[in-house]
Length: 279
Image 1 (tube, helix red, strand yellow):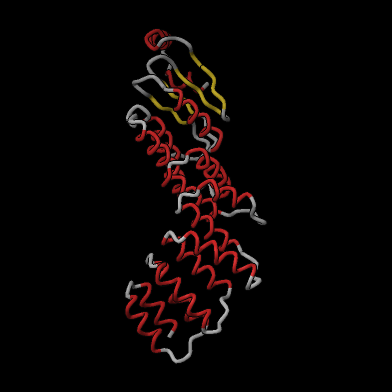
Image 2: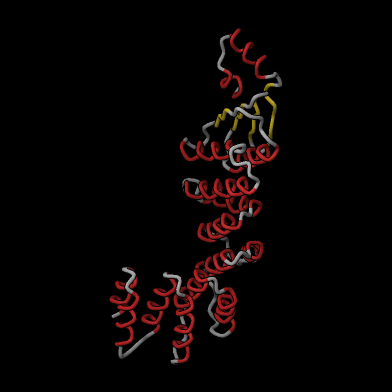
């Protein structure tokens, strides 16, 4: 019967899943958890919470998996207070030691509710090392609420844990894009997106060279320095005035000549400007 509930749930047929559940003569924690999880996955936390309470009223104590299900349901439905209550109840009433899955649900819960700073402080107090899921939940929240400061910290941890996961580079680029959009300077700051695109499409350690037909702004200086340290990559940006070189979180002016003077010079010695910039 539990298998039927899960089958209907994964197909999005919650009414059929509920009918199977209601017809069950004996319901254990596993069957309750299956239905609670089904409502949670579809964003119906308002139904999952009373169902969880009904399970408790029936005399059954939730196990670790059931608590993951209800915390996840609260997270996907924005039920911040309820989620906090169940997390405390888990340790205080049921004496269940939280696992990494429970902490990840709490970070996701806080992040989705806009409590990004609280989510980050929560991670710092964890009794275990945060994993990819924990940092990923925080980075997703930073994208939603455009928190670039904490987003960079989360991204830094993720790039160390799973540098091959391109999705996190995309999330970081989205944070930059949203911040730029708010400032109405998205086109001016396109070099950030170009850098992220290069990271996604080149081998680790490959130098990144960007050409820009406008001057590089101060915000992009900071971004390029941070990215060169996090990834790490050597980044060379050529604007209308000069080449800007970023490596290991620091910036060095490679050439201080004006662009026209530089072009004449390079043509006279028949050298590639990109190769000189990288040397």
